[in-house]
Image (tube, rainbow, N blue to C red; front, side):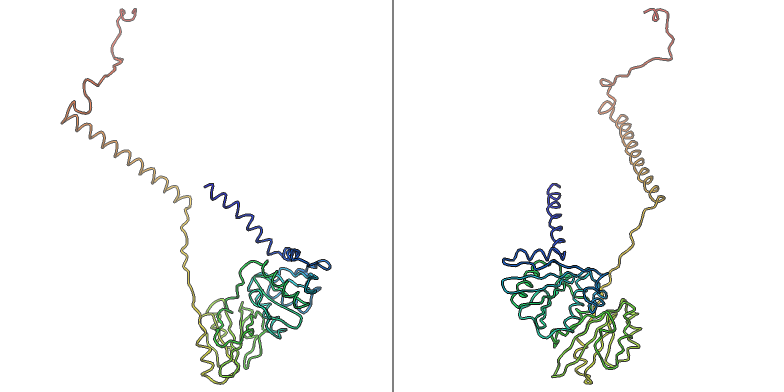
Length: 351
């Protein structure tokens, strides 16, 4: 018992430290431990209400995926100057989605060194995502690499991609082409596909990627719906010949008229549903509770009655067949009589 209490006391500060490490200001202050690094100016923070003051172009996407806040800070270090922008999203999947949008819009090459869960570089800009964060660094290459490594060490939490993105086949995929999409306007152009008809108003979410097969580049789009019934409704009106539905997952291919190539990719798309049946727990109302109490009382009284009758019957049987053996021996029996029914004589009263 004391051991469990002691472990609980130790875990509480640990959890507090982990939560603190997830705070943007804590990440900013962690850079102070780097030798030779000095902040230039004060950190500037933005929340959902004033994102337009930060960047009007990014504000819409950040609100779409769900943002907790944005903080910017500049430093000067031994390897040069760098400006960091920390985008804190509400969920790792949200951070992944915003990261894929920026990669599509800005990416020119992979980062020379991998940081976080995924990273890319665009000129003098370096992006990486990890847990609920997307980090953008701008400045000298050496300073960006050093700061990226430090921030990646400080960020805690799982870097979990959204469910629909995990269904993208990995064979023949073009690295860096993956996208996680929550709005029709972000759907890449696909022949015969109307993005507005995919059902984003019904809580659909999509993931897409490019594949290179036999020298040809094709695109696969996966749309995940809350239920198979909703997926069936949109699959019937998708208007694209190369498509198939697997449960709540709808797959669409464009960029090829070769059925064998399309089939090669489609055959890798799988969806396994897991059904958990939770039986409702029976609740005890006042009536059943009273019945249960009196049932136990009845059982207890019945047990006592049976035990009493058994003991009494055993004593009677022993006295009848084995007198003066175990119970009721004359030498051990002493009866005190009060004789209340006898009258007293005057002599007895005088005494």
